[in-house]
Length: 204
Ligand code: ZN
Image (cartoon, rainbow, N blue to C red):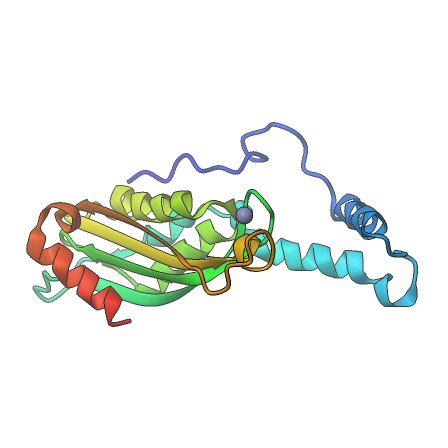
């Protein structure tokens, strides 16, 4: 079981992490840059609120999502079919524009001999989503974590998400959704299992 890697840049010891007060100063600067007065009443508490919101959106840097998969159950009563959790809400932040990415993830795996609590799959999605991400890497991070830690016979991850950097600005393509997938092992190679997984996701 590999719980290594994926330490945040701060844990791996590059630059010291700025304090919340320093982050609030940066938000003040952005407000002034936008053309408003950070000291007017309505904006006075805004930097602190923004930093608290960001702390939530970036909470993934303070955890190793692989840890959620460490506790498994081996008594599966002979169950040897796909486990699929569909419609997991994804809230992430695009690393190119720092704008929200909102969508759903569908996660499935074919257990070898142990399963994990289903809420843990959602926690893995959340742990990787709450960072600066690109959707392709987020999809791969989730699939690889399940593959490496649970060692199942197959893994499938599909994410469909709307990128505010596309829908709120630039080309303004409302409703455009990006779909990414990563299929490993039997979910990639076995026709029947791949079909079963994709049908479960489509029905979601
Ligand atoms: Zn973007």
